[in-house]
Picture 1 (cartoon, rainbow, N blue to C red):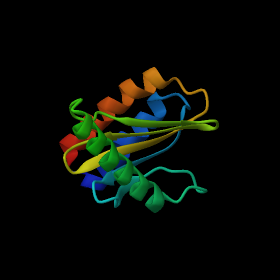
Picture 2: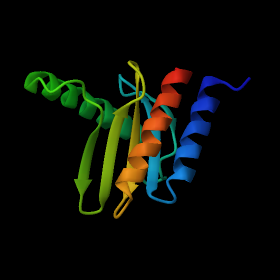
Picture 3: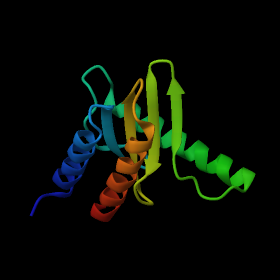
Length: 123
């Protein structure tokens, strides 16, 4: 049987493949910011992405709680050169996705939710 990291790597590769080139990088990250598996491009520091993703989700959850709008399902940063999305995969992990400018956000969100569920099942 494949190790947990191998299973997560397969999920990330499937997500990247299903997104049709919209994904520039993807990582499974622990809630503490430790990267479990990364498929980020060489010019991106995966450890920093992990730390940023955990921080973003922590802040998003605090804001959601403060505003009493329910549980945070995802957070997205849109910039002039692309998007960065973070969503929970389980109570202990996150899925961080770096998207190219012009990405089909709707399709990526559908694929990302499925990948996050699969990662949560592995963890």
